[in-house]
Length: 184
Figure 1 (cartoon, rainbow, N blue to C red):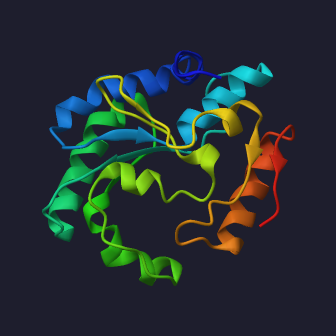
Figure 2 (cartoon, rainbow, N blue to C red):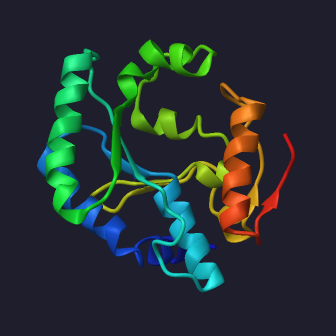
């Protein structure tokens, strides 16, 4: 699968297109629609399912040097208001501050990041490691092979958790039984 085919299938989901069209209104730096809503929309296209089938939420990363809770909370409130008319659950997170809360939530440390793309690099599986910026730029550090073959394999390079991997892979396999899951 090449980038053009990936974009065609990911953007067949009108919700992805709507989010990307509205993101600039938030005025956030280094902003990306990431992961599940993208690769899962592709899986849906490959398997003949509706574009939004099985998608739980829509994740957006941005990067802001203001790592205060208040600044991120304000951005989250703005996003909630912006996307409310679409009836979507959009989860917005400042990648500059993930290291401040990650260990408390997931029990393992997390490094200080320098960009949203570094956050994408840390997803549990290479198939998850994709993002589209509002200007149409695509970030896919491992390409699109695992997305196209519907293969989930561990990304052991960063803060890997076998339990979280098994949980997510199991949920995805229940929704898309065509998946091949490489054991952790």
